[in-house]
Amino acid sequence: MDIVEGLKYSENHEWLRVEGGRAVIGITDFAQEELGQIVFVELPEIGDELKDGEPFGSMESVKTVSEMYAPVSGKVVDINRKLQKDPGAINLAPYGAGWLIVIEMTDPAETDKLWDARKYENTYGHE
Image 1 (cartoon, one colour):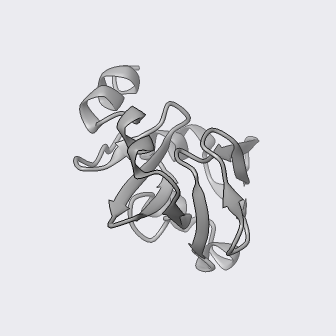
Image 2 (cartoon, rainbow, N blue to C red):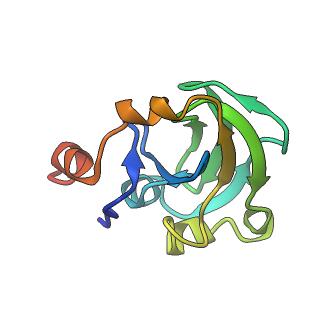
């Protein structure tokens, strides 16, 4: 399982990379391994307002359907349109080409409650 230093992590297996007042969000390597081959992704629309902890889309794999939860609040400013044609990019590069959305954060201090790589690994890396 890959865990990237410098990212923030949620208990729901989303990662977040802060870029100024924006946050790039995706799912962790652990999550994509648990889901298996991802075959469909439903993402929010640009302009949608997300609230911390609430669902913002879903992901369908050969095993199950799983909701994704916003790790922070904000307005969607970009979505990874490539995932509509190639949702498997999440399996191949969850921290790279498999990113999901970019939001303009309402309150960047919300990232303080998220986990660092060490806490995420200590919680989920020893299964």
